[in-house]
Length: 207
View 1 (tube, rainbow, N blue to C red):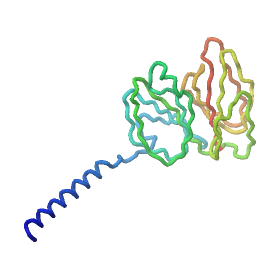
View 2 (view 1 turned 135 degrees about the horizontal axis):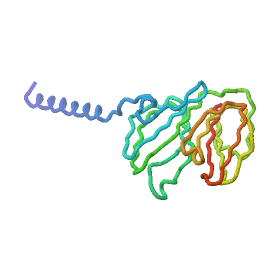
View 3 (view 1 turned 135 degrees about the vertical axis):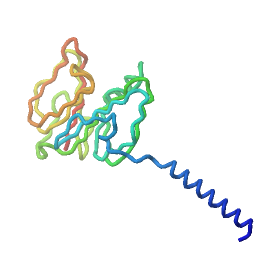
View 4 (view 1 turned 90 degrees about the horizontal axis):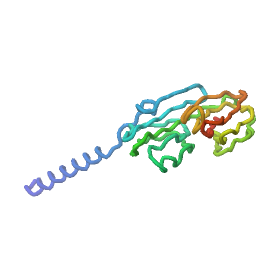
């Protein structure tokens, strides 16, 4: 091989090496399961649902993590201050499982989500009727999402959900972000007593 040919070959190898290095640097980091992300805490799990509390302090960047299961994220706080802090609170967004992502809290406050994974219904053949004072926001093949709002002094009459569901408090006496599993067939009532915040609750009913 001539000297010029050797120079061209060496140059080509150097370019190829740089391209490979750039490709490797551009690869996304390996994703961990969502429960292994340090700020995502499993707070409840049974055969019907799993509940994760994701609380991200100001400036926190999560690990790249995978949500294998379908899930509903309820926004409890958005990390902002002032009027912007009220935007999107209580939003309940459904996502199909099988994706990975990283979340950055670039705001000055805490960002918090309650993430509910609907696994299966506890009474799959029970009938479903819209309870009083409930608004059906989302319904698909995996879940029904209801919202309850009560002004101060209002109450919700006793009623029964035929199937189990998760209650996530957006505002009310129990405090933002409180969550619990309520089995089907349990008599339920709700009140916004004087002196407490108005009540807003998201109910998530697996199918």
